Image (tube, rainbow, N blue to C red; front, side, top):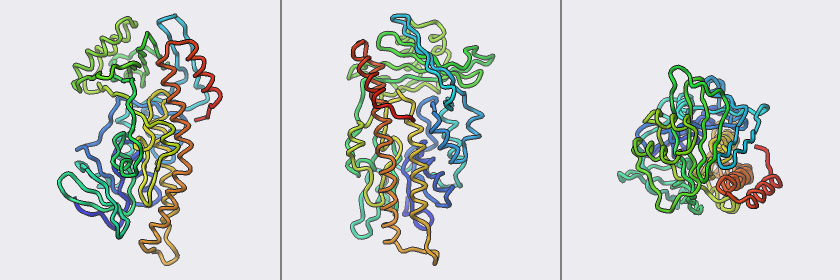
Length: 391
C-alpha cells in the first residue's frame, strides 16, 4: 500500500453503502476518489434493507434509483399485530415511496456505477494521524505501510477509526439484537406485499416480502442479557431463531426453517446517542465522517441506510463546490485545504440537526418497542408526536 496522489486526493474508508455512495456522488461531479475496504470483497451485512422516500431521492441523484426499483418491493401497509392482547393496527404508506430490497443488490449497484480500481480491498487501517507540516491525514496499515490523504472521509461503520481520530464518543451497545435472513419460495410465497410485525413478550418478528418468491424475515429480541452472544455459524443462528419464535404462527417458523443459510446474520444493535451527535465534533480540517461512522442508529425507524445515502449526496455537493478550479484551471494545496475545510463546515451544519432528529426518533421508537408499560408507551407516543419531524 502506497501514498495516493493526483486524482486520488480523496480517500474514503469503508466500502459499505455510504462509502460507495459517497464515491459515486463525487464521481458524478467529476471528482475522483479512492475507497479503501478492510474486507477482501464487497460486504453486505444484513439480508435486506428498507428505504423510504428520502433514500430513493438520494438514489435517483446517484443514478441508480431506476435500476434498483426493478428489484425492490413497494410497501403500502405495515401491519402491527400483538399476540399478547390480539390488537392489530395498520400504518399506511400509500403516498410515500417505501420499498424493501436485498442489501447486496444495493451494494452491487453502487459499486457498478464507479470507475474501475476505485475500490481497493484488503486495506486494514490501524491508525489515523495528521501530518504536522502539511496537515494531511496519514493512514497507517497493519502491514506497516502508510498512505496520505488530502481529504479523508470515514465511512467505516460503528467502530470507525476516523470517528475515533475526531474524538467522537464511542458508540453504545443496546439490549436489542436482530436475527435475520432471506427465504426463497420457488413457486411463490403467497404472502402478498404487506409488511407484518408481530410482537409477543419481548420478541418482535417481521415478515417483509421482496417480490413474489423472496421473503425477508427478522427477529428483534428487545431485552438481551449482557452476556448474550450467538456464534456466526448459520446453523446456530437458525437454532436461536427457532427458539425465539416459539408461540408465533407456523408460517414464521417455516420462514426460519427454510431460510437460505448464507443469508443468516445476527447483530447486536449499537447506536450513537442523539446528544453525542448534537454536541460531538463531526469534522476537523479536511477530515469528516458519514453514514454509520457518524450516526449509527437502531433499525426501528428504517432510516439508517437512507440517512447515509443523504450524507453522500450532500457531501458530494459540498466538496464539488469547494473543488471548482479557478480561471487558470488550478489551485494550490493551501487554498484547496481552506476551501475543503469550509465545505465540511457546510456539510456538518446541514447534516447535524437532520441526523440528530432521526436518531432521537429512532431511539424513542426503540424504547416504545421494548416497553410493556401502557403509561410508558403513552408517554413515548406523546413525545414522538410533539417532536415529529418529517423524513
